[in-house]
Image (cartoon, rainbow, N blue to C red; front, side, top):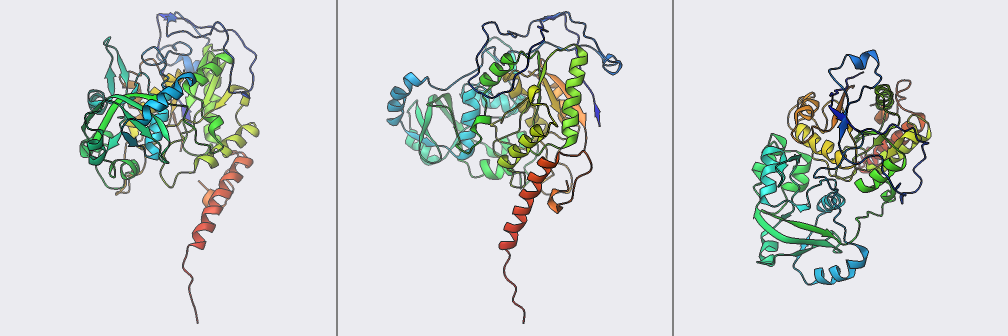
Length: 449
């Protein structure tokens, strides 16, 4: 395993290096200190103490916690004092019913993960995202936006909406979720969307089969208002911290650097070694209190990925066993659905963490990738994800930390020494044993004479 840190010399660097007593995250209603330690991405000259390995890199690091894209974190949840009035208003509007994955995107947009996006994309935003992987703001600045965040409707719904400018959004179970205002309806060219997002139209792409193929032939964009915070009532909502809540907690811990690590699979000791080594290197660079954002993906995943509840239990054991330090780690669920779109999607993953306050992003081999659905090969070049991140428009303020590394639970075997903590490994073995038992009960009985 090797770790390469790409660093840049900055002319101006504003960094508060006060040492702080660290506290565990036990209450999500965190108090904000009156004078936050981070404000914007202003830079002043900085000469950190570096190891020989780091000195061999080309230049120096950037500031502590960075401001969100667009300068202001989007929050589209209606204030509690206004919910009754907005609900009454929404009840009289034409209704658009959301799928489970549509609701996940409502969650993502409403909390500001996609800042400065304020709703489902209108055609102008959709075309910029699809063809340029970024959006141009009114002031001429560029923000990264590599995945179209859109809402599809069918012909019947389009007819029902007619010339109405506002529509109400219903959840999968029919409950009122929010309002989409000043809407624009435009054609949903599925083939173009698939080809440009995945670079292929091969059959078997999980998100395409689950979301795009059965979707309607129209897209509706507009400004989103969500009547109340999105909750799933699955026992994991306390892990779903919004970008605003994360920034408050980083401030509460007096973090001077945040390094984010995304997972959609269990943590093994190679991951843990990498995360611990990254913190050590940041300390060598001169940071006093770098905090790890361990940020597993919590939206749609393909059927053979380990389920979220199992992953979260395994992650909890990793912290309980001391493989990662709970004092310098925040575990939170990233609510985005997964596309498996490789270098295109990894830009979205990185951009969203900027909005949460992270200024370092760890990227591994074949990020957001998968095997080709019809051929025996990777769908994307394993090294292209980290290369694209280093060049992507709108991600210049994010420090990219690439790493290289390359599972026994299905067979019940013990992993190599140090691969994973025993408690975490037991969770995985039990999960795969339950799958095997379920499969066995579904096998037809064989009669013999």
